[in-house]
Image (cartoon, rainbow, N blue to C red; front, side, top):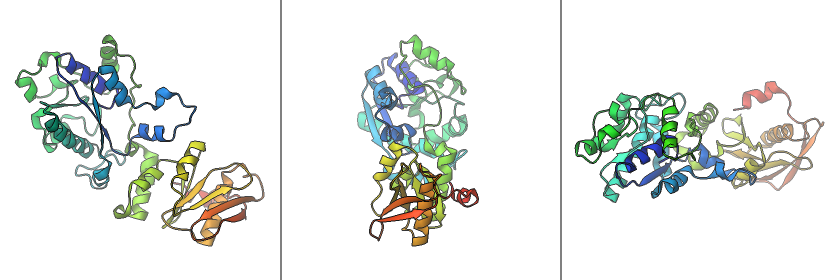
Length: 339
């Protein structure tokens, strides 16, 4: 139960056949909407910050269980049996991982089957017939896995054969368009749902995955953790050396987010003009590296047109200090470091 158009419609289709539905919402740690809530401005429209799974559960009058998958999800990302999509999205392995957890919840709840909002042909990697069969098999659910929106295009499942569901009242939607689903939910009086769109997972984002691959290369998969994953979601990133990165906030909310991660790092900020909060990552900088980081911070401050900007640096293994540096405006130096 993502709370999006497809999962909402799938749940309602089941309800119309008298099925008691329990929603299950999985959080992998890579959800864009979760991060937007964590870094939202106080001026943000509250409707944009709500958890759509809980909103959909309230609208459908069903309970929704929130399940955190992050504890072992990085292993799925690092070593996907079925590889990646266009970027670092391990969609087949991700779906299988979720449905293994869903199977355990099904058994705990005493439920008869698991249903998803998947639509045949909607996603190029995981929602074609062959990978859907793989997911069905490797999740352990077998024919206890139902896709109500495309059920008539797929093999009959156990709940259909057992008479728990009328197959003729399930749907035969295929493809990437959402017009059919929109018409169907609106005909049922459901109008409050997020605009259909892909890209809820950071691992499908080209910019994020470029930084993720850089982090894996220089830090090593065996040393990466959720703090590394979180920092990749915000700011401008610069590779200073194989063992040192610099991260700058792009707006006030990102500056506040970076403040949570200053422990064990060097924090830099312009002393007399407005500018970003920046932190170093992976290792502590040498004197020369810290001067370079300060020049980058000055370049993104309101003092970039000045001959020199005072940058306050704190943390690391030295007392708080002020560095007076010229903003680094030379793109031949800056561009190769920018991730």
